[in-house]
Image (cartoon, rainbow, N blue to C red):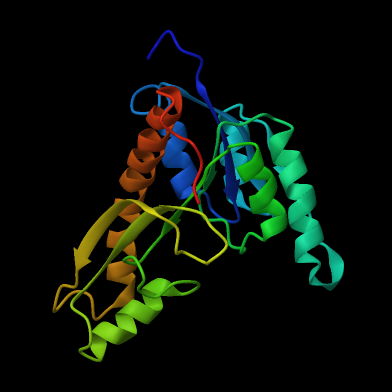
Length: 212
C-alpha cells in the first residue's frame, strides 16, 4: 500500500493524549499508510495538543459553547473536521458525546468515526467504565472487563465492534483500582493502533461503505 495515498486521519482528544501518542509513534510502522492531518481538542489545556505540536501535527481548540449548546457545537465541529477532508476520525479520549449534528455530516461524507471504550461490548457504556467495572468485580458480579474499539453511532458505545480485548481481574492486585487502570491503559495504546490500522486498510481497499 506504500504507493497509495495515505489515509487522512483527524484525532479528537480531551486530555493527556497517551493514546494519541501511540498513534503518533506508529506512523512509521503500523500506521505508515496513514497521515494525521489534525488533532482537535475541546479543552485548551489538554496535553495532547502539546504532543501534536511536538510532532508537527496541526491542532485546533474548539472552545465549548455557553448554555451547553451541544447540537450547535457539534455542527460547527463537523464543519471544522470536514474542512481537512479526512478519511477517518479517531476519538482518542474525546470526553463528550457526539451529537447527530456531527455524526450525520460525516456519514454523508462517508467518513467513519471510531472510538476506544474501556469496557466489553454492552457492558458499562458511557462514563467511568473502569470504575463501574471495578465496583462490579468487588461485588462478585463479573470476573473480567476489557477494551473495545468500535464505530461511533448515536447510541453511546454501541457501535459495531472492530476489536475487543478481554482483561480478567487479578485477585490480590486489582483490589487497588490504580493497578487495574494502569494495565488497561497500557493495553489501550496497542489496541487503538490496531483498530485504526484495520479501518485504514479497509478504506484503502475500498471495503468501507459506511456504518448503519
